[in-house]
Image (tube, helix red, strand yellow):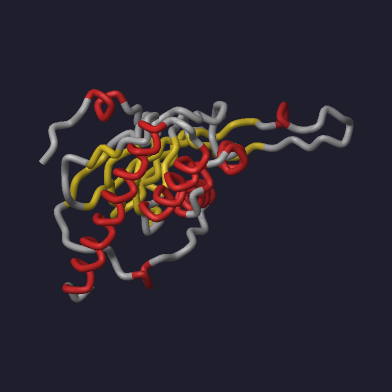
Length: 213
């Protein structure tokens, strides 16, 4: 097992306030996936859908996802990338005045990719529960400044956040970056990371095929 690097320790996770480790084998059944109906839950569900689709790995997708955040930030082109999987099992914990907390159950963390395209494995195993903080804000200033502009209030996720995607989406991203760069070291790093993630995928598929879940 590799020792955690300074890069791993430096990765901000302000959006994911608390991560609770649950040592349970395998992923939950696909049939448990259900689109939520509560406004707070729906915001988190949409955000995690962007993650599973790899939207946070491009400026265009990042812009779309940022509309769900309290304070959107520019696309962090050289920032780290979290490698995750989420079944999007979303549940509202509480709502008080203009604040709320929503949990996302049974997510899996697989490590991160740094700005040099190096892969840093996660140093724990198991499933996690991520807690999101939300705030109910007035978005009228974001609308067209005209007489027909409407007054809008909606839930937003308290940020900032960082790029995140599934193993498959990160592999595709690394292949694209490898083709785009002329730096030999960066190409080599990308190739090593792709190989590591492909091997991880194979191990995960073997493990899931051996269990009844």
